[in-house]
Length: 293
Image (cartoon, rainbow, N blue to C red):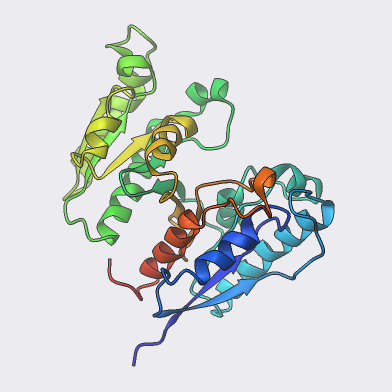
């Protein structure tokens, strides 16, 4: 008999909606029954909507514990509830986000941030950086590296010949250099290299960012590779806010999270939807090999 995968779930900042969406998801009847679930972290006294240093520290401790549980083989995947980055930074969390934390603790340089939902799947070349810094941070090799990761993710999910659209950086993908040189000098050469070096995957681009998401949502593409955070997350959250899942590509263990934040303003009011958390748990179980794709 096949051993059930164990999915660890952190509560995030317990002053936010993390605890209630975790509880709602696990009692919804919508999470896979062929996985077992383990809540990670200690219960603390906290008022909903009022984050404290203690709630930030508890969230940080739960993340550290989840890494040890993964390394020890006590859990097979982790789902992380939302954290408050400002509070975490005050207790010594020196990372832009949870994606970078897991990459550091699991010593994984070849990683990427991906969000996937009912209508779209996007991967990001740059993540939590100022928009003004994006052009200088873009590198052809990074576009190629993350293009390979998103193609592999699509294949892992049963797409035999993925179609990956690559966004340009500038309006109209630069219009042959009229609006910046990055698309001509970085993005286009990266797409050509991906086309030549990755078998069984159809890469195309650079595509104008203002039009590519419509055909992607219509099913013409399996994933969109985006140059910066909001380029990918605005369309995904517009179309897939309730089904979107954040997944860290390239890690040795599956790590997913809902695509929303702590929502301190509605914590404890009963207004928070558990839908994204349900989908995050479903994907973690799927990636652990215990659920059908």
